[in-house]
Amino acid sequence: MSSILERMPAFESRRLVGSTFLIRERDDVYDEHPHIYAKINPGISTIVIIDTGCGGASNDPDVGVTSLREFIETVDVADNDHKPLNKDGSMSYVIVLSHCHYDHILAVEQFSDAVILASANSPEFVDSENLPAHSLCDALGLRTPSYESTLVPHKHEIPETGMIILHTPGHTPDELAVYDYQERMLYVGDTLYEHAPIIFPKEGSIIEWFTSVNALISLVQSEKVDDGGQRLQISAGHETAGQPALAVLTSTKAFMQGVIEGKEPVRERMVKRGEETVMYRQDNGVYSLICPERLVLEARAVQCS
Image (cartoon, rainbow, N blue to C red; front, top):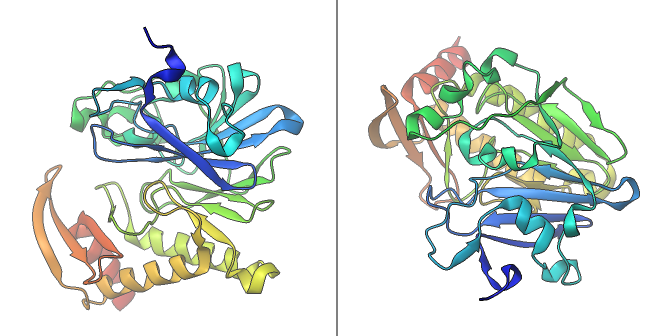
């Protein structure tokens, strides 16, 4: 029988920048293909994991390694000198959850011994009573993971990692971003990404989204290194990884502004979680949006007032 290292994992990984690796679920049953980020900090014997993905449930019958933690600790990664990212679990874990949706938290229980950080912007949104609904686990008939997180304030610094947590509500009230000022990378979770629909649940707010994106644009522009921030990169919870931050932020904002101003036509209508939901999509397919129509109308009313 083949050893565990010879069995195909549900994940693939490559170096993203410096000491940080992108881990991607290849063929998950939810068709989410979430991005998971791992920054290795050997000086403090800690590995920071941003999001934990869908839990390794794969459409591929040949997949043998479905545990994210097992992948990180046992599977060789070519870009890491053909060694596991955290061989035998020798480094401790800090888990940062960009928000509480199921495709970002389903493997979090594998890290019960870790420090788990989440946004303190809306504590009631992520409390144990509301988590089943707000994680969307209830809507999908999934068991909601049980975990204890430390809710951290805006601009919380993860000690000795060069990483700062920023509150960026909009997609959800608990959405956060992580800015790695050492490696000049901005991790934005599901706030925005390219080539797949940006999805707002009924609990989201496009009004707050614009405020958060404007703050991120200001952050990038304030970084005077690398041509005024043009080379500072951005990575998201899906699709986008290692792209020019300012260009992605401003082009996404322009698309969303077009939606609010009525310049982008509604391409499709549907009902999701009991609400009239609309889809907008650029002709070139770079940006698209799915959200309750109510959120568009609320943002339109504010911008027109």
